[in-house]
Image (cartoon, rainbow over all chains, first blue to last red; front, side):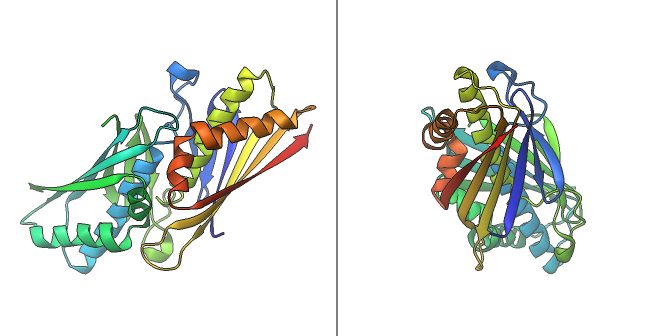
Length: 139
Length: 139
């Protein structure tokens, strides 16, 4: 068991979680008795997915000597209606910003991450249909 | 698509993600070119799991009129060796702290969360074997 996180109650529906030594507050929505002192737990999965593939892509593009001015990843997920509510569809939009960016290399980096490297993507694909789009912003 | 998160590059391997309006920094380990400015992306899944079930359990125990002094949840996961590296085993340890806590109600609250309510648990169970333990600390 190599990965560990801990969670501790603060008050109401609010909890503190420690991940790799960094503390994050999680809280419920005001509609269900929380105070919105931090994010809801479930969408952390979407940020885990975008963070995982972003680090892969950045690392692969570094090796390919492709220089970016910026990288953004927006993730949207569809949550099912019945309890337990889970994500059945997830879409990622990668926006690459830079000068004369080589589209083929950007696509290749995303494919390598999605198919070979990103463990979070592998996990998410076991419960959701994962799709992605690539956008390029010339700077 | 009801749930959304965004992610934006900061520098190096570090990214800012916005979840329900709250910003969290993610960063890689120093060993792989990061600066540890925030947690790694993958273990966010473990915190999502503990946060989700913690909010369920707290809400169920409130309805059962069970008062806790504290609740902690420690999560451990085994990561596979081959790329893409994912979690194949996850264990949660629930530690309930309080006076004369009714063990049957604590167990029932955890079972209801794990089996019926916690969407993150449902998702994690589709790629990992999920086990849990319940500890009671008399105060």
